[in-house]
Every structure is written in C-alpha cells, then in structure tokens.
Image (cartoon, rainbow, N blue to C red; front, side, top):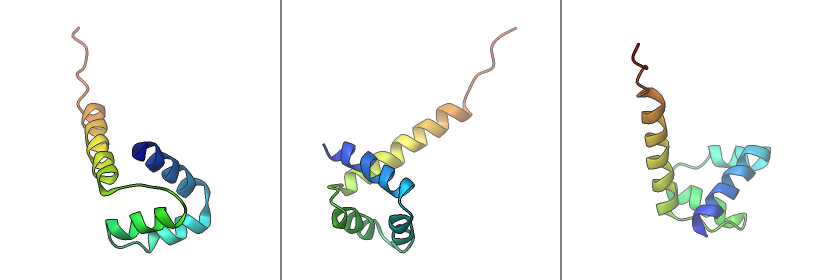
Length: 70
C-alpha cells in the first residue's frame, strides 16, 4: 500500500502548486515524508529509496540500448 501512496503523492505534487511550493522547501527525506503525511499520504523512507533505485534502472536501460546488428 505504501508504494501506491507514494505514487499518489507524486501525482498530487505534479498537479498542486501549493504542495509543489512546499516540497521545494524540504531539505531532508524526513521533511518530505512529514509533508506527505500532513496531506494524508503514508509514505516511508523505503518508498523514496525504491524510487531512486527504480529511476536508476530506468535510466540505465534507456541509455544502454544496443543498436541492432546489420
């Protein structure tokens, strides 16, 4: 459930200018988690770490495409 909450929070940040402004003031992961909880989202540090890892894999796959043999 927590991962789904994280995705929902990201969606809120993308579509709500007030939350977006507040997120820019977050200096630590704990600040971000506290902000999410303030808006009713239950995210954890593990969610943030998972997202970092998933993003790294996504970028690696995107940048590591092998050209087809001719």
